[in-house]
Length: 232
Image (cartoon, rainbow, N blue to C red):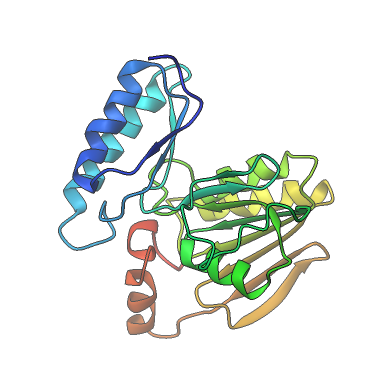
């Protein structure tokens, strides 16, 4: 087969390590969206996550190896090109392809958060929406840097539930770089309750768990069990 820019994988979670390995070995896949859940965020799926991480590590050792979004991801929606891997019926999320897109990018660990936000604010019409999932490879900071480089994006909204090791610090650096170029950034951890301003163009909504029980429940909820400690 000819090389592909993006492969969308909607197979069973148990097949993900093998498919990711084939992407690496073929040398013909530049990037892949891994849709399935059950690859580390659920009880008993840790072996799948470890095998997938091994395949991702091999990709990083290969020149121009593929990058992976997900798993447990809805993928992305790009309004300028009408590219959509959300695969949602219009009654659940209106496409509004005929409406002009706005210079907004939404990056979220939760696909449901994107759907709720876009349903509640129909005229939001973000240029790019990305459901990042478990972050087996591409992380929140990677996506922020990628969309911040686009000339058609002036505002970046991030819904974060946890970070890979050291990615919380890297995300702060990515925000600093983006705001230095005039991009407005906002991040909301799960759930957003309190907020304060980091600078004139970057705001952070945060909840601090005051007990060990609160920290544990926050970490284990939804994608957070895979993505790291809330103390990041």
